[in-house]
Length: 304
Image (cartoon, rainbow, N blue to C red; front, top):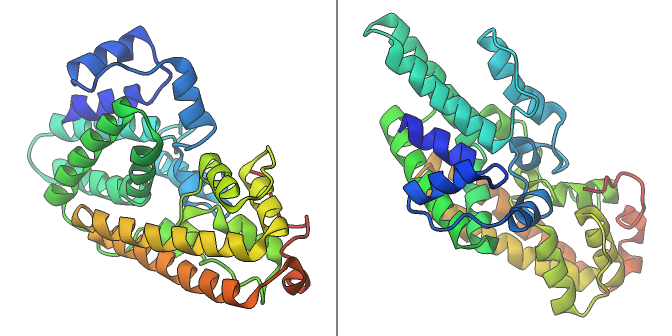
C-alpha cells in the first residue's frame, strides 16, 4: 500500500517516461499526453484541497494554510503546494513508511493517530467529490486511476476507522448564501466553492449549460462565465444549477459506502443548495428581479 499511494501521486503529475512505466505496472492503460493532462488538471478540475474546501473555490488561502499546518505540527517544512493531491498522496505514503519503521508500542500508536488524522482531515474530506467529477470528464486512464485510488482509500478508512467528528474544513465551511439577503457577488462566488454549494462545476460544465440553455458563451474564468449566464437568463441558469445540485446530492449519497462521515456532509450541502436554487428559480423571471440583490454587480466576484 505504501508504494501504491506513492505511485498514484506520481501519476497525477505531468506525464513522463517514469509515470508511463508506473501506469503500465498498475495496468491502468496508456498514460495520456501532456496536452490532455493540462486541459484536465490545469483548466477543468483542479487537484487541490483548497479549491474544494476554500470559501471561493480558488487555490490557496486559509484552506491551504490548514494543510500546511500539518507539516508544521510535525516540525517539518511544508511543500510549496501542500494541498496538491499528488503531494498529499506522497505524504500519506511517507506516513505509512514512518509507521512501519516504528517498533510496536507507543511510538507506532502515535503514528497511526497521525495517519488517521491526515487521511480524514486532508484527503477524505474532499477527495471523493474530486474523484466523482474526474470519472465524469476524464479519459479512461484517469478513470481507472480514480477507481484504484478510491479502492485504496476505502481500505484505509475501513482499517483506521471513522473520525470522531466531521473534518474541520467541513465544519467551518459556510453554506451557500441567499442572494436575497446577502451581496449577490458572494452568492456566485460561493457556487464555485464545492464545500459551500455541494457542487463541482468545471468550465466545461458551464459551457455545456450555456449551449443547452441557448445562452451566449463568454470565454473566461468560471466566475465570469457564470455571471454572464445569470445576466442573460437568470431563471434558466438557476433551474439548471438546481438540477445539478440534485444530481450531486445523489452522487454524494452513493459515495457514502466509503466514507459516510463526510459523504453525509456533502449530500446535505448539495440538498440545501438545491432547495435554495429552486426557490430562487420560482421567484425570478428576468434579471430585474434580482437586480436589488447585487447578483449581477462586479463587486465581490473573484474570477477563478
